[in-house]
Image (cartoon, rainbow over all chains, first blue to last red; front, side, top):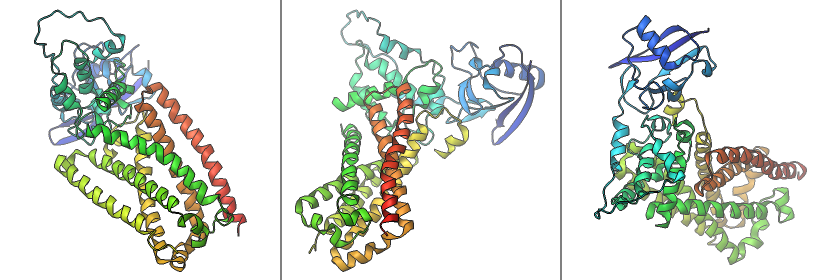
Length: 226
Length: 114
Length: 124
């Protein structure tokens, strides 16, 4: 049973401050558990997002000791520090306390036309599972890759790893008819795959262990030969 | 097409520069007794620099370095969306102009060799 | 970039390498400018050129030359590493590559810097 000091960067519109709380940890306590404790027992005004609590929805992403992670999947004891610093995800506009707006993320997401555009012929397609591509389906749109990307920190228009990864799935889907459209968006020198500088932050932090840099790299090579 | 080519050229020129630089370092520091001592004078490099083949190699070296370097500088600027797409085109034009002047300096150095 | 460094504590899989690449690249551009401007003095004939490069024998200058060698090696090896990634090297491989390139870089640096250093000291 350890005592932790949880420092939270809180804010309301126009006013940002840090508030500290003390939490006595229970066995296998996660950061999200700690937040529930604080909200229930110490400060009911604390705002944060969560939903599934088991790492499947991606809602509780936040900056934990200055690393973007899922709060429900981060054990307090694993942080190896008596002080836990919580802040909203970087690269996103803050709404309130630990709640950010994912608007910028989904703006880029929509740009690559995430929905499958059906092919004109109505033949049934049988798609064999491809282990190479399967893992890339696991994206839970948590926004961590976007938050960690060094390019996103200075470039509002860059597509970002998640959008490019989703585009990859569509482009490699034989039923999709918008391939050229998507490739054109990805090929944009200003905002497309060419802005990626292989920093690997996204790959290192993706909670679903998707190799995002590899996906982007594949597109670069594809666009080179096409 | 173009962004892919720019990206590819950056890698190719980079690889070429590694080879050219090793050769350049070798030629300028280890080839003659003077240069090994670190004595840089007109005479020390005269024999090599009078040869038009070497001049061509040096100019090619400079051009490759300029393409790689200025393209890299442009890449840095492109990472800041604040300048906007039009700003990026403007910066590209400026860098091309700078590159042209720079290249001229390099070529003009060989104008009056005795 | 600076903004992110304040809000981000790692992992720095490739981010530091990227920053080093940019910093060394800009330094090398500055160097190239000075270098081309100096060589331009050839145009003035032997006397003018020798005057322009006279200051290059000073010990400070030799140290700067050795520093330049370090910058070049950093940029070149890191660049080769990036090219390997672009050809398909994966995340785990690239971390090893970065470590190796630092090690190999140190060796190459010494191979170049020691003769340079000795020649400027012994050659006097």
